Amino acid sequence: MSGPLQVVLIIAVIAYVLIRRLAGEPAEAKRMLILPAILIAVGLSQLDDLGRSGVAVLFLAGTTLVSAALGALRGVTIRLPRRDGIVFMRYTAVTIVLWVVNIAVKIGAGLLLGAIDPAGSDALGGTTFLTVGVGMLLEGVVVLARALRTGDQVIWAQGRDGAPHRTSPWLDDLQRQLSRRGRG
Image 1 (spheres, rainbow, N blue to C red):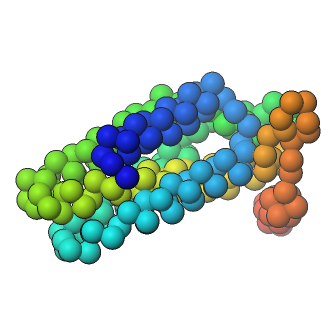
Image 2 (image 1 turned 90 degrees about the vertical axis):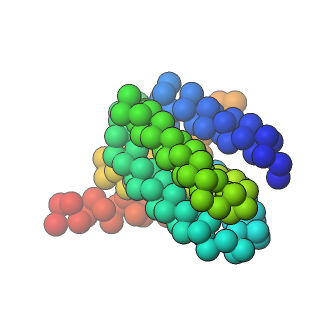
Image 3 (image 1 turned 120 degrees about the horizontal axis):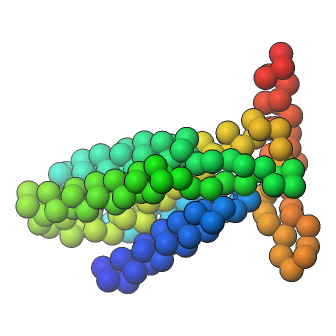
């Protein structure tokens, strides 16, 4: 995927997530898990040139770990209000700051790598999907874990055109188990 196209797609994904979650949306497990998994898969498919630069591999490992940590922190900062018995999620100002820090770290690491190893920097450019996906996945896992402990319904997918929200037996069972542990 070309550099400019990748930048536009990453900006679109982040803007989509920010806008929806700033306004507040149901804590929809499918959206919190599937979109990041797709981004990770796309990112992994772009790693073919990375193996030629050990420095780039180290930078990728570092930026991925930072994205994972910042994603988990974002998950902690998200508000989980209840509406009609369903858990909703809403970004806070701190969540936005953590997104900005995450993006700044990725850009800064790319610039630093470009100064150290220009060829490695070119190879690292295609890994943004991977690091953003990892951060979003950790954010989603943390939010899901918190949401399941609320006792309110966590949906799998939002209903469309008046259809009821879809639930997941797996999520419902997990929530029951967590509820029993909390009481026991």
